[in-house]
Length: 304
Image (cartoon, rainbow, N blue to C red; front, side, top):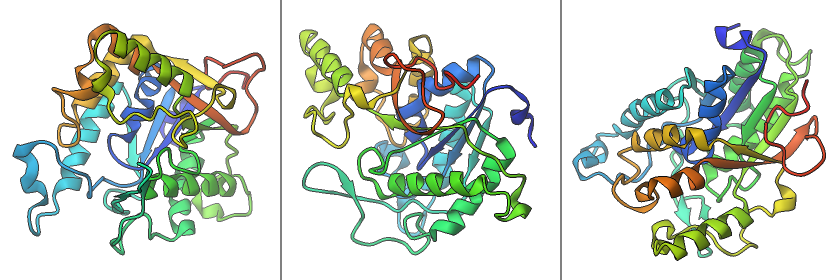
C-alpha cells in the first residue's frame, strides 16, 4: 500500500492522454489535492499521436523520431505538479499502451482512425488492460473513481477504451476470487463520469458574446442534443473549484506542444477564466447514490 492510501478520502481519475486530465478535471484535482485528499491520476497513453501546435517542437514527430510521447510525459509531470497531484501513473507503466490516434466524423465528433498501430490502446486486449488497472485499484483503494462515459466525452477511441477498461476493472477488483495475486479485493464505492453541462455551456457562451468574445471558444458544442453535452437532470455533481482555476490554467499552459497559450480558451480574461474553468460536472455512474436534492457539491457526498 502506498502513502496515498493512508488518507480518509481517496480519489482516482482514469484518463486517456496527457492534458485530458487538466482540460476535463483539472480544477477538481487541484481542489481535492489542496484539501489533503489522496488523488491518483492514471493516464492510459502518452499521447504519441497528438497534433503539435508549437513550431519549435515539430521535430518530435519528424521521420523516425517518435519522441512526442516522451515530451508529453514531461508536460504531464509539470501539469500534475501545478495541480498538486503527486501520484500520477501510467497504465501498465510508461509506453505500455500507445495513443491510437483518431479521425473526425462528419458530425464533429471523433472516431477511429483509418489506420491504427498494433500497439495502440484501442487495439489492446480489454482484459489485459483492465488487469493493469485492477492492480492500481487494489493498491490505491479509492472510494471514488472518475472516468469518461461510454462515448468517451466526444468519441475518441482512447477515451472510449478508457471508459471500458475502468468499468471492467472496477468490477473485477471487487471479486475476492479474481486474481488474488493482483492484491486484496477492493470495492469502489462510487463511479462518476465526466460531463459538460449544456445549461452551463449556454450561459458561458452568452456571457462571452456579451463581452465580444464569442469566437474564443469556437468549436464548443451548442446544440443541447449533442452527445458531448449533458442535460441538467443527468448531472449529479458540480465541483465548484473556482479558487483553483489558476492552478488549472497553469497546468494547461504546461502543455505547450498541444495547446496554444496565446489564443482561444487560454486567452480568456481572468474573471471569465475563473468562471469557465472553475466549475466541473459529473454524472453518477454506479455505487452509492449522491444525496437527493439537486446537484451535490462534493464527489464524496454521502459516503460517510
